[in-house]
Amino acid sequence: MNVHSLRIIESIRSVLGDEIIGLHEPMFFGNEWLYVKDCLDTNYVSSVGKYVDKFEEKLKSFTGAKYAVAVSSGTAALHVALLIAGVRPNDEVLIPGLTFIATANAVSYCSAIPHLIASDQTGLNIDIELLEKYLSEITDLRNDELFNCATGRRISAIVPMHIFGHPVDMHKIIQLAEKYRLIVIEDAAESIGSYIGNKHTGLFGSAGILSFNGNKTITTGGGGAIITNDINFATKAKFLTTTARENHAWDFKHLEIAYNYRMPNINAALGCAQLENLHLIIKMKRELHASYKCVFQDYSEAQVISESDGCTSNYWLQTLRLSEELSAIKEVLLHEINGAGISVRPPWGLINEQPPYFKVPNMEMADTKIAAMSLLNIPSSIKISTNK
Ligand SMILES: *Cc1c(COP(=O)(O)O)cnc(C)c1O
Image (tube, rainbow, N blue to C red; front, side, top):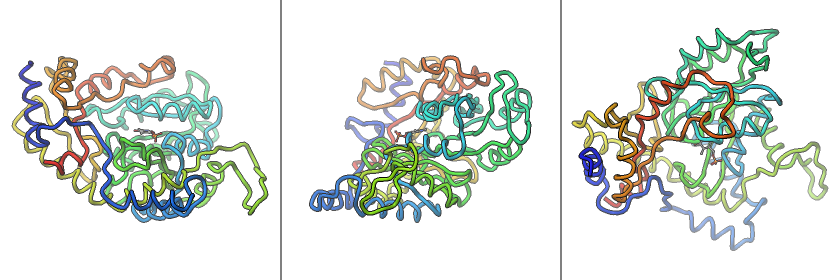
């Protein structure tokens, strides 16, 4: 086996022990059974019941958002948020080139076109300086609307994403968005419990979205939420995600074509229990980070990535930055380390490497690709750190 594979395996095992280790597993150690059983006992498993409201209340108090709307997935949350932001068919929407496919798909669901932003040299988040230079070269502001000179299409919004829980600099993005008249919707799917200063990610733009899929920091089985401080945005979000039904005890009157994106009660019940332990979960994930930091500190070939100054990361996925030498043999490392029963994985392929998005407009992606090559996610769930 390659000496570097061995070294990485030894380091991870010294933190996590000898078991088979997954990348990220959900952990249920609170009131999950109680609340889910309550749904079953009372027959409120679906679209009616008390847990959705409770979940939204708890989300508001955790994030500090004035409003929270629970929905069936993070992708659904993003779709509806973009519609409310005013994204129209044939618009372009700026998104990171390095993100999960859902960010691009949500744009497509609006019949709009993703326009890809390069990452900075850390390979983590979008490069705001490069983006600013790029926009100054390829766009034209007319009547307070931004146009792509090459395609003639309107660019209506930007969707920054906080990769693996590490916040992107939202202050700079908001400045840029004001200058270029872009609506900001934050893809905070990975960053519940991550802050810039004291402000929770997702609350810098018009709205933010969270995901509660099974592999995220906390889960509702499947689910998502829109968080915002704007009452009109929240009201519209509730309306559009619940089939645009007029409020009435028995009449079914639907005022426009909308979506069945409501979060079921049974999922919200699970989420309520998860949220009760979120502070503890994040504390433990930060401890896991500190342990990794320690075992990798003398190993210059692979360094653990830490939160940047002024930011707090939830450390959803712990990540190594590999040297050039190790990036070049990443396939070997992936093969050997996974083969040894430790789940490690590369970040997603770039969006313009996915067949539906081969031809979308994009910034130069060569450096983003190199930076992404240096990233390796390592086991990150706290279940494993408690078993130590
Ligand atoms: C998980 C994720 C989503 C979508 O969430 P789902 O709940 O799985 O639909 C969107 N964007 C990013 C960056 C994600 O990681």
